[in-house]
Amino acid sequence: MEASFFLENWASLLIALLAFAKVVVNLTPTEADNQIFGYIDMVITAITGDRRKKKK
Image (cartoon, rainbow, N blue to C red; front, top):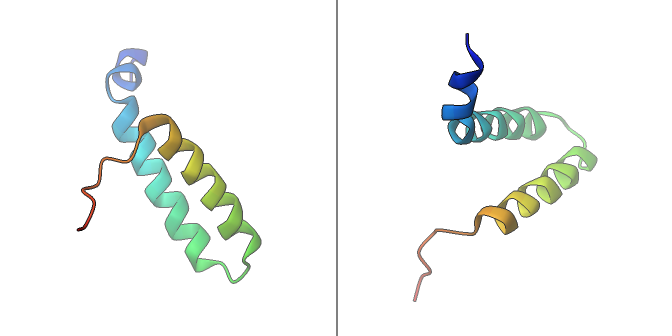
């Protein structure tokens, strides 16, 4: 694989990594890792913005 693959697809790879991490975190019985993932998720949402439509 070339480095250009990662540069062209960094957003998709990041989303896939976060989805995988969320599955692993939810399968573990402790709450500490859930809180850590929640902080990471909040930071990424703050950087990228929330694009979901708001309900009325």
